[in-house]
Length: 280
Image 1: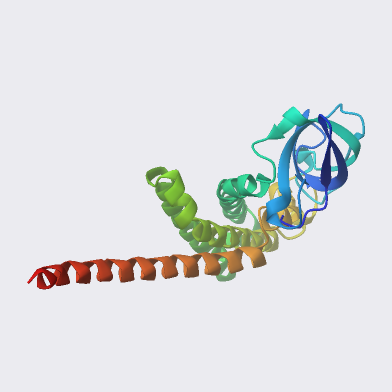
Image 2: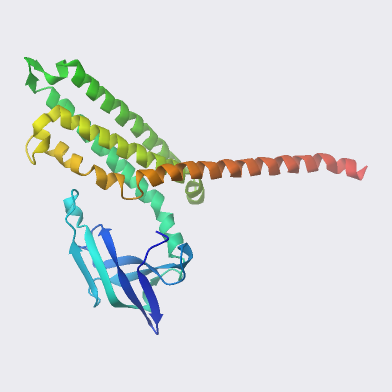
């Protein structure tokens, strides 16, 4: 995010916007865009947010043909000398990176809740199908290997749901600033957990459905679709690799802060004990 290339140069009362954006959800439907662009120097300190209208000259959108989530209207957007009024600046100039970061935890939490529900759909569909499909004179659920697959899916889905409930509780009881400080790492790791569980459940449910999971429509349509949409959950909002690294770094920062606070508290207690001796 700190290295984005789209630029906006202030000329009189307008910014001149140039660049491109890819994988913009709902891009072909939206009438307004919140555009992160470079108004200052390199890095996170030179980014601003502009409110851009779809009918401004020089702005073009086209739908991207993605593997899954077809209804999201994922778009490729280009800006060619788009004149954006100075008054369309959102917040303060060059503070856009800070504004974007304040939203990431909520975006990732939403992906977590959605993804774990998708995993549960794979489990539900597999359980229903295995109780009616027969092979070798038995329903699938009567085969130990199928029960093992369902048990593994249930174990992962339910444990992940428990973690999701814990984060939900913390979000509802902590102040906004405390949640921003303490839950970033947890949310990042939870996102990895949710998407890896979905990937596992999508694969195992496809094995249970067999060829039915390879065709669009019919009994295996949900499983087929969710297998296509795993990457649409694992990559947006931060890839698994970035989330794992972020989770460790956030935990390390909190540990260092706790150590400093403990040291300061110990020093303050020591100063209090020595004060009467100084008077004597």
